[in-house]
Amino acid sequence: MRNEEWVSLYLHIPFCRHRCSYCDFNTYTSLADLQEPYTAALCREIEQAGALAGTRLPVHTIFFGGGTPSLMSPAQLDRILTAVRQSFALEDGAEVTMEANPGTVDGDYVTAVRALGVNRLSFGVQSAVASELALLEREHDFPDVVEAVQWARVAGFDNVSLDLIYGVPGQTLHSWEHSLRAALALEPEHLSLYCLTIEPGTPMNRWLGNGRIQPPDPDLAADQYELAGDLLAERGFEQYEISNWSLPGKPCAHNLTYWRNQPYLGLGAGAHGSANGYRYEVVKQPRVYIRRLAGAPTGPFPLTAAVADYHAVDQTEAMADTVITQLRLLQEGLDLAAFEANFGQSLYEAFDGTPGQLIEWGLLAEGNGRLRLTKKGRFLSNQVFYRFM
Image (cartoon, rainbow, N blue to C red; front, side, top):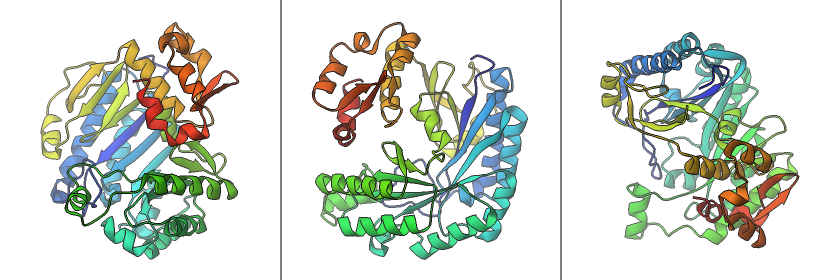
């Protein structure tokens, strides 16, 4: 890796009070006693990654994801951020995001984490409708969201993101609009809107199998997505990525690292990373993670002692990754000249016939040297991406 190249850091916190009915993330509800040893292990992994780099790499974004990072004490978060500052060159003004569940924070807590340098909060709202929150098995209600955002503003946060889910069984176009308008009334700078995917092994998947819930209606979900786009545009939000909207100048810089296919380190149990020509995955189980980090790394940067699996990215994979990630950026799209400069061949040479066919079908459009998803292509984006894999 070039010494001047910066990275982003994703730090995974695997602890939760309760696993939601749709969740298939690497989270654990009965391991709260591991928070202290896990904090120490994560600090060691940060130190290992920094040492393997051979230089204090500049870091321009940090993202605490989970799980529920807001279950960590301010003291634990302080130790983690101190380890980052000691092992990396955290840039002035770096974006430091923490995911938080409404109902797990209060005014003192958000004030404390703001003082540590966290400058962006992402609240998992999911819905403003009580029956939908119950189905999703969220532990908060919408008044908790209102209170959490108010506390964040008092603490000095001027960058707040809210997550919502559409395509929920039983959700209507009207109830979805209600959630959108309720979220907008809180004046967030950013919104992430995700279509529910019912994953194998989740309670919701079992409910689907035994008839407790009906499968989501993809046509309704498409209508909900379109409604969101129209409503948010009216409120001045820009859709910079398939699932993400922000006010002008407020996109999530960490998200942009992923979608521009730039290097990031995934640290913590179950995290994924991509840097120095490698894609890798950290061991999932927190107890195993802690044990692993009692040892020393054996691989090159960024392969710490906790890495469970990795591979070198060849040109074919790198080209596909570049196309699939950058096409998600609806305004930027894929820079065709940069693609050719990076890979020594044009997109049309690398993917013989595929881009032209997708343009002919009205799913992609070329303009100003860039390839972008059309409005039709946004609704069929997975089909577009599949053809480049």
